[in-house]
Image (cartoon, rainbow, N blue to C red; front, side):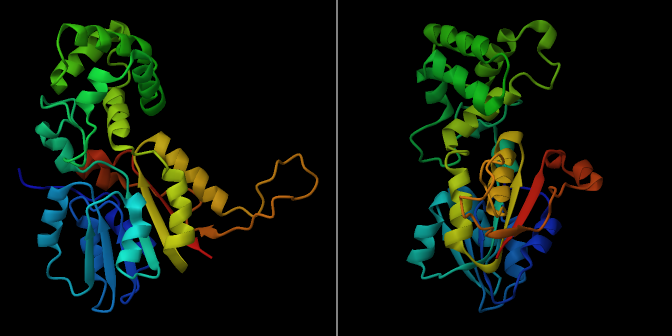
Length: 312
């Protein structure tokens, strides 16, 4: 299957990064290379781009797509949360900009055998890294009912988490759940009929929750944002993050606001005792949203939000 992915908020991201031709930049979520290619095209031979992805197919495709650019290019087959090690290994002292697109690539969703889609039948996988030990099949077939309930509730904000988890545990006693269609059928039947399609497909939130668990998407995201500002960006460098659901957007928003705050004391205290100083300025107070035109061209852009900060 050809690797295809439509980059969300592409022009807005490039503008937000305020790219210097001789600067060093990082794309923490390479995907189809759309954002990276636009960054690289704006860099000269003295500039550089570090790109991260857990998907080897994404890296292979991007290497071919970006091969004619003049700047230095470094590809890292690891999670962007390991950025410090990669920077040290490549003697990169600091970055002028970092971009994170926290969405799943269109290629991964559209490729049924990757198991991300609840609309197509495929192996129950969902691992962005094909070599990873944990996948969706293991989560569904080995996690306790209590753990599944917690995951569906926390990561999917699914109000029928308990009944869905119970149905999964009952079904796997009969035979292992190995296909996405199997799981979808179990979820649909576990949701009361009158609520099944009241807020979109009933499997959407559960699939999101399992995907987040398998890939550790929210794990240490907040701490990583702090580290990128403090240990990754140069003064004046920018961090731009695209989110796609309320859980990750809340983490990003809260982290950005904390970094941009002078005082984080309890409001009831008469004087400041925390001595916290603002470390960044927010480039946009409210998130940048995709245009109506972009949403019409790419349905997956609807929920996207872009937040940008600059290190002081």
